[in-house]
Image (cartoon, rainbow, N blue to C red):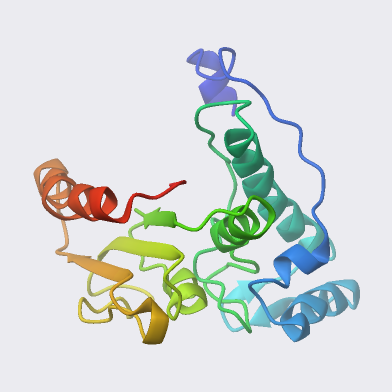
Length: 212
């Protein structure tokens, strides 16, 4: 934040206030057992909730605030307060599965935000583009059987978490609405530009998302 401030990147931005969202909004994409387990284990001082995801006594509240940030950024866009928004958080949450934490991710922030947009604003088509170097396996799992979310993930393969095969395209109502783009190690700008022009842009034009 200090570096961004020094570079003059923060001053021109609209800074959005964030309030904690209801726990039920998180439970819209995660099981209630997982949501309550996070709160209970953090309160009891447990040091981790999975083999690769640590907890602190404040973990439940902080993870909830991360999901809230994604929701409030989405809300500001959908209500016309801003044209686009960026929620600066760590972790992004995309490894968090419907029933458990994974890969440092406790709650799946983008899934919570997409669910909010569909439920509270009546949207019918949301596109999630995951450009992290790792596959967004949690986001894929949450929306794998749905067509109201088009999920695309570009990720280095092979790498953690070992998922994200190109032939996983969704199931049932969501068949054809899940795209995994396996990128070789050291893929550069030219590779990503080609994926954007030849795959992502045509898919977006065909799907006509109301929110990305």
